[in-house]
Length: 133
Image 1 (cartoon, rainbow, N blue to C red):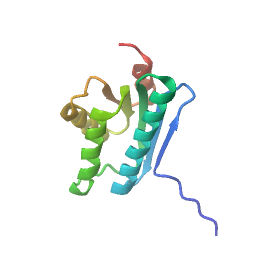
Image 2: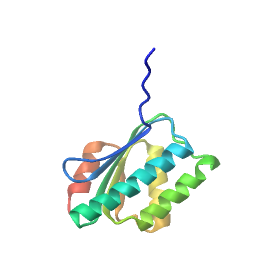
Image 3: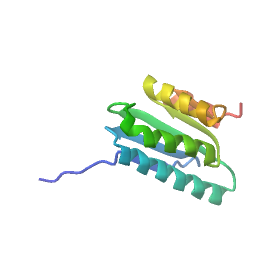
Protein backbone atom coordinates (compact mmCIF):
# COMPACT_ATOMS: atom_id res chain seq x y z
CA UNK A 1 0.00 0.00 0.00
CA UNK A 2 1.40 3.34 -1.06
CA UNK A 3 0.94 6.22 1.34
CA UNK A 4 2.04 9.77 0.87
CA UNK A 5 2.49 12.23 3.65
CA UNK A 6 1.81 15.84 2.93
CA UNK A 7 4.06 18.37 4.60
CA UNK A 8 2.40 20.19 7.47
CA UNK A 9 4.09 23.43 6.44
CA UNK A 10 4.95 24.44 2.89
CA UNK A 11 6.94 27.59 2.15
CA UNK A 12 7.71 28.91 -1.32
CA UNK A 13 8.28 32.06 -3.30
CA UNK A 14 5.12 33.00 -5.19
CA UNK A 15 5.59 34.00 -8.87
CA UNK A 16 4.58 37.56 -7.86
CA UNK A 17 7.73 37.73 -5.71
CA UNK A 18 6.34 37.41 -2.19
CA UNK A 19 6.90 34.53 0.22
CA UNK A 20 3.91 32.28 0.73
CA UNK A 21 3.51 29.77 3.53
CA UNK A 22 0.71 27.23 4.14
CA UNK A 23 0.02 25.45 7.43
CA UNK A 24 -2.20 22.36 7.14
CA UNK A 25 -3.43 19.65 9.47
CA UNK A 26 -2.56 19.16 13.10
CA UNK A 27 0.65 21.00 13.97
CA UNK A 28 3.29 19.91 16.47
CA UNK A 29 5.93 22.03 18.13
CA UNK A 30 8.52 20.61 15.74
CA UNK A 31 6.44 21.27 12.61
CA UNK A 32 5.79 24.89 13.62
CA UNK A 33 9.47 25.47 14.47
CA UNK A 34 10.47 23.90 11.13
CA UNK A 35 7.99 26.19 9.35
CA UNK A 36 9.44 29.24 11.09
CA UNK A 37 12.96 28.17 10.08
CA UNK A 38 11.80 27.74 6.45
CA UNK A 39 10.26 31.21 6.58
CA UNK A 40 13.46 32.70 7.99
CA UNK A 41 15.53 31.09 5.21
CA UNK A 42 13.15 32.27 2.48
CA UNK A 43 13.14 35.84 3.82
CA UNK A 44 16.94 35.90 3.76
CA UNK A 45 16.90 34.55 0.19
CA UNK A 46 14.35 37.11 -1.03
CA UNK A 47 16.20 40.00 0.60
CA UNK A 48 19.46 38.83 -0.97
CA UNK A 49 17.96 38.32 -4.45
CA UNK A 50 15.53 41.25 -4.58
CA UNK A 51 17.54 43.71 -2.50
CA UNK A 52 14.51 44.84 -0.50
CA UNK A 53 12.46 43.71 2.51
CA UNK A 54 10.25 40.68 1.91
CA UNK A 55 6.47 40.51 1.64
CA UNK A 56 4.95 37.49 3.40
CA UNK A 57 1.56 35.78 2.98
CA UNK A 58 0.62 33.00 5.43
CA UNK A 59 -2.39 30.70 4.99
CA UNK A 60 -3.61 29.01 8.18
CA UNK A 61 -7.07 28.03 6.89
CA UNK A 62 -6.00 24.38 6.65
CA UNK A 63 -5.18 23.99 10.33
CA UNK A 64 -7.03 21.16 12.02
CA UNK A 65 -6.78 22.87 15.42
CA UNK A 66 -5.10 25.91 16.94
CA UNK A 67 -3.04 24.72 19.91
CA UNK A 68 -2.71 27.47 22.51
CA UNK A 69 -1.32 25.15 25.19
CA UNK A 70 1.91 25.53 27.11
CA UNK A 71 3.62 22.90 24.92
CA UNK A 72 3.57 25.43 22.04
CA UNK A 73 5.17 28.21 24.11
CA UNK A 74 8.55 27.81 22.40
CA UNK A 75 6.87 28.23 18.99
CA UNK A 76 5.14 31.44 20.13
CA UNK A 77 8.39 32.84 21.57
CA UNK A 78 10.30 31.96 18.40
CA UNK A 79 7.58 33.49 16.23
CA UNK A 80 7.59 36.71 18.23
CA UNK A 81 11.40 36.91 18.05
CA UNK A 82 11.33 36.39 14.27
CA UNK A 83 8.68 39.09 13.90
CA UNK A 84 11.21 41.51 15.40
CA UNK A 85 14.30 40.21 13.58
CA UNK A 86 13.24 39.30 10.04
CA UNK A 87 13.75 41.89 7.32
CA UNK A 88 10.21 42.17 5.92
CA UNK A 89 8.09 45.07 4.73
CA UNK A 90 4.77 43.52 5.70
CA UNK A 91 3.15 40.19 6.45
CA UNK A 92 -0.48 39.20 5.93
CA UNK A 93 -1.82 36.14 7.72
CA UNK A 94 -5.27 34.73 7.07
CA UNK A 95 -7.19 31.99 8.80
CA UNK A 96 -9.42 31.18 11.75
CA UNK A 97 -10.26 33.68 14.47
CA UNK A 98 -8.03 31.96 17.05
CA UNK A 99 -5.02 32.45 14.75
CA UNK A 100 -5.99 36.07 14.13
CA UNK A 101 -6.11 36.78 17.87
CA UNK A 102 -2.85 34.93 18.53
CA UNK A 103 -0.94 36.66 15.72
CA UNK A 104 -2.30 40.11 16.66
CA UNK A 105 -1.19 39.56 20.26
CA UNK A 106 2.27 38.37 19.21
CA UNK A 107 2.67 41.32 16.80
CA UNK A 108 1.77 43.79 19.55
CA UNK A 109 4.18 42.15 22.00
CA UNK A 110 6.85 42.19 19.29
CA UNK A 111 6.18 45.84 18.47
CA UNK A 112 5.51 45.13 14.78
CA UNK A 113 1.71 45.40 14.67
CA UNK A 114 1.88 48.06 11.94
CA UNK A 115 3.64 45.65 9.55
CA UNK A 116 1.60 42.53 10.33
CA UNK A 117 -2.13 42.22 9.70
CA UNK A 118 -4.53 39.31 10.01
CA UNK A 119 -7.53 38.54 7.83
CA UNK A 120 -10.28 35.99 7.45
CA UNK A 121 -9.93 35.70 3.65
CA UNK A 122 -7.06 35.33 1.19
CA UNK A 123 -8.38 38.08 -1.12
CA UNK A 124 -8.38 40.65 1.68
CA UNK A 125 -4.90 39.60 2.82
CA UNK A 126 -3.48 39.84 -0.71
CA UNK A 127 -5.09 43.21 -1.31
CA UNK A 128 -3.47 44.68 1.82
CA UNK A 129 -0.14 42.93 1.21
CA UNK A 130 0.19 44.36 -2.29
CA UNK A 131 -1.16 47.84 -1.43
CA UNK A 132 1.00 50.75 -0.34
CA UNK A 133 -1.19 52.04 2.50
